[in-house]
Length: 308
Ligand SMILES: Cc1cc2nc3c(=O)[nH]c(=O)nc-3n(C[C@H](O)[C@H](O)[C@H](O)COP(=O)(O)OP(=O)(O)OC[C@H]3O[C@@H](n4cnc5c(N)ncnc54)[C@H](O)[C@@H]3O)c2cc1C
Image (cartoon, rainbow, N blue to C red):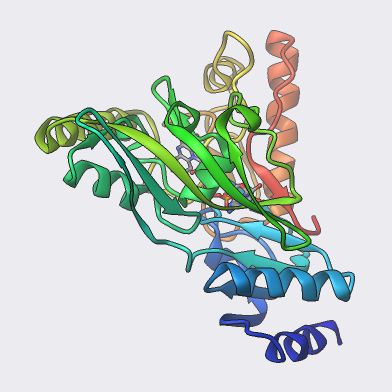
């Protein structure tokens, strides 16, 4: 069996971190949907990640990297091969490149985005406030170029440390990353290990005030307390997917246990026992309705992994 073989290989290397078999993915996604990950690894350092990647390569096993699973739909058939979570790589701090106006901070891919916002605020560095309320890890935010209220991660990123599937490290500068709306040219073959960001000095009170205001605006317009994966569809040029879905009369539409949120139409909620099949069924229904109503074809923003 491939799982035992991988474990055997990893036991013979300096792999530090948890190894789990048949790990239920609802525990690792905000939607609480999906079958199990065949093998799930939680490397505690870059060398352990490298050893895991080499073991996967040697055994010709597929690799899937996830963050906090807040933009992720996992197939009901689960994820074959190795699923890697970098939640242990959560260190953050200052790089030392600081002057009177600005500082460069680093954070590991597994650092919770909210934790990074709080760290920056407490130390009096501004620039991330508009991201208040976005769940997930820093690595996922970089990969997705997460953003809100007109601000995106790309606005503060200086460079990103990545590892390819052969375990080779490189540092990519911001202009090599091809950031655009909710995407970058980071391919599935590149794993974000950490990134440096530049922030501007400001008073902790002023920053906290702005974070609070952005969070309030988010809470007023988005169903933050319910199991979702954030926006399901990308905003088409010059319009908002939520507005189009609402205008097509889809609010409250349901397939199985997945429902279009009444608060924000681009959020689909798991009402209890939803499956990936339900979710994709509802995505198709909504796409069809929107196309019939406005002629616009919506494209998914969420990432779908595993066997549907
Ligand atoms: C209630 C709610 C509100 C949200 N609001 C917003 C919002 O306002 N703006 C916004 O942009 N998003 C929003 N999101 C979506 C989501 O939180 C962001 O996209 C977030 O940045 C995803 O991070 P994650 O760690 O959860 O990534 P995941 O969902 O785990 O992964 C997303 C993608 O990134 C890849 N990935 C993750 N980590 C790495 C890594 N280290 N290296 C390489 N690839 C990686 C995965 O393979 C996958 O393709 C919201 C989600 C929810 C549930």
